[in-house]
Length: 77
Image (cartoon, rainbow, N blue to C red; front, side, top):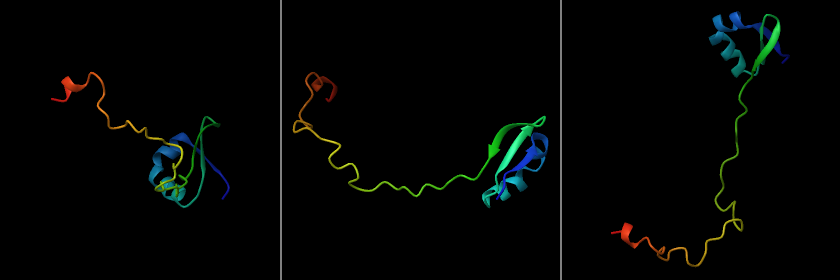
């Protein structure tokens, strides 16, 4: 779809209608006094879900991970 230009005042008065069209893929360039100031475009969905084990080999837990921290005994009672 080609980008449509729309004035800021008109965009404000027709926002609900414009958002509906944007959700269908339409892109709007919003202008103020004929100069572009913003673009309103659909959000690209993120299909990247975290996968279990994707950081394998990047994170290393030390053997002493669960040893008491020196000087912390007074805070744990």
